[in-house]
Length: 477
Image 1 (cartoon, rainbow, N blue to C red):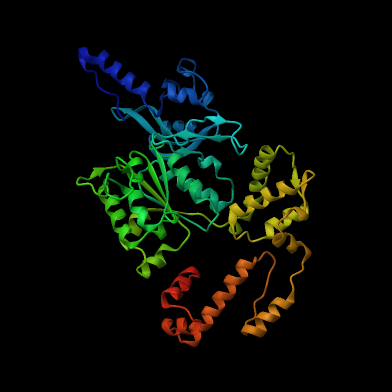
Image 2 (tube, helix red, strand yellow):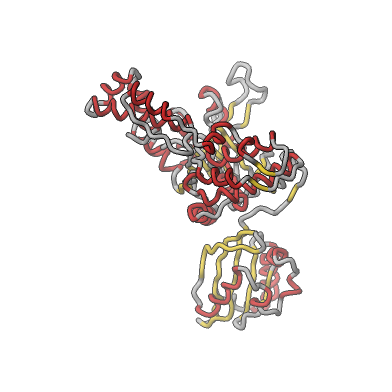
C-alpha cells in the first residue's frame, strides 16, 4: 500500500474525502507509523477497544493492544510481508483481519489493519422464554439469527478445527453444505455462518425441505402469482428465495427434495434468477445457499437419487459436524451449559451430576447427539428434588446401564432365532441394536446371493429400491 501522492490544490479535498471514507467504513481500520505509534483509528475499531480515537492516537500499539491480535501489525511493520485472512478476537468478538504494510519509495512507513467483525453486535436480552440470554438480530424479512460461532460449545480438536474453518469461509460468498448426524446442531452452524458473513445484516431464511410436501415445496421456494392456484393467496405469494435477497437461505434436509425441483434449484444457484409460478418474467435474487443433511448425498448421487451437478454446486465448502461420541471431551462443558440454561428456566439451583452419572455420560454413545444430551438433562430437571442429578432422574434406558443388568438372554435369543451372535456393550440403545441386527442380516443376504442385489432383496422380502435405501443408510453401497 502506498501513500497517495500530492494533488496540488486538491490535496486538502482529497484528504477530506479519504477521512470521510476512513471514518464511515463498516470495517475497523487502524494505521501505525514506522515506530509503532497509532496514527489513525476509526470509531468502529476504537469502540471495540472501549475507547475513542482521540484517546489512543499517538500511543504505542503495543501499549493499547496488549492481549489481542492487532499486535500482529507490529510483525508486518518489521518484515514488510502482508498477512490476509487472519482470525483473532477482541474481548470475545471474533474478527477477520488483513495486515498490510504501507510503503513509500519501497520504504516501509507504517502498516494498516483492516478488520471485519464476524459476530453481530451484541444485544443481550434477558428473560427470554427459555430463560437463556441470547444475541438476536432481526433481518429485513423478519427472521431472527440467535446463534453465532461463540454459541458452539466445545474445545475438542475436531470442533476447534471446524470453528476455525467456519470463520475462514463465512466472509466469502461460497455455498456451504453442513453434514452430520441428527442432533449435532446443523442449524446452529448455519446461523453461525450467516452471523459471521458480510451478509449478516441481510435476512436469514430457513426452509425445511422434509417438512413441506413436494407439491407445495416449489411454491415455497419460488412463490406464485395470483390466480395460479385455486385457493391461492390474493396477490400471490413471494417465495423464500426472493425473501432471502441480500442474505442467506438455509435449506435443511436438502436430500429430501424431488429430482424435478433439484433441477430448478440448480438453475437458480447458477443464474440467481427466480421465476414465480405463473409469472412471465424472472427476477434476480442475490442469495447465499447454506444446505444441511444427515444423509450421504454421495450415495444418493451414485444411485441417481440426487443430481451430481447440484451436489457439487452445494458442496463448495463442507462443514462435517462430528457426532458427540467422537468428541466426548466436550460432554462436560455441554453438561454445565445445559445446567445453567435449565437452572434459569426452572428457577432451580442444580449444581452438579452425581459422579457415577457423569462417568456414565462420558461412556454412553449418545446416538441422539447433543440434542439427546440436552433432553436428558431437561428431563432430570422435571423430576429432581435436590440439587444433584442422580441415576433415578435419568431416562430408564440410560439409568439401567449403571446397574450392569444387560441380560444374556437377548443375545441367546438372537443366536437361536437368527443364527447371529450380537455382542451388546455398555451404552448401546435399542435403536442401535436394531440397526446393527438389520445390517448383519443384509450382509448375510448379500453373501448368500453372491452380491446380487436383486436376489438379496428377494431373500429379504423387500423391494430393490428399498434395499438400496438401506445400503445407503449403512454405508454398504
